[in-house]
Each structure stands twice: as structure tokens, then as C-alpha cells.
Length: 93
Image (cartoon, rainbow, N blue to C red; front, side):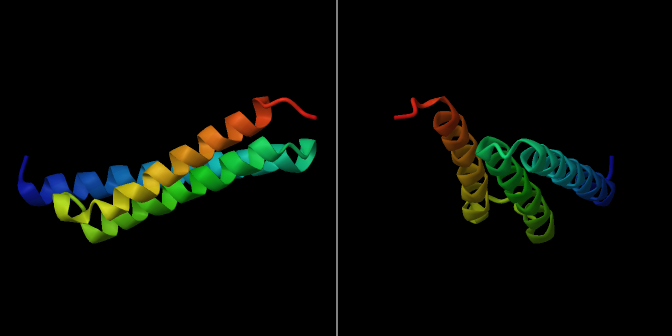
């Protein structure tokens, strides 16, 4: 596969992943609105962060290792998911 074609395929896949993560965020927001569970709101925000990160990685061509700060945003989203799980499972006083 040519380099230009490979780059276009990578952008297409990144766009599909970003769209999917955005839709997943919408589903979690809908669950939050019906149940008022904070966990679902945290998950929605985390998935929207992941979608925005995917778009940023595609736009800035973050294939080189000098743009590692973009991947720290992904770490933030995963830590947010872990916090949501911890918050849901901790004992209520």
C-alpha cells in the first residue's frame, strides 16, 4: 500500500473511532438523564474526551514521538473512568 493511501486509511479509521466514541458518550448521557447516576455522566465525559483526542491525533499527525502530550489526554480519560468506578463502589457514609 502506498504511503498516501495508508495515511488516508488511518484518517478514515480515526474518524470512525471518534464518531463511535462520541455516540457512546451520547448513550451514557442518556442513561445518566434517566437514572441520575453520576457514573454514567463521568463515562460520557471520558468518551467525549477520547473522541476529541482521536480527532486531535488525526489532525496533528501524531505518529512521531514528539507529540506525546496528546496521549496524556487519553490517560486523563482513562483515569476519569477509573475514578467513576471507584466513586460508584466506595461505601456511602
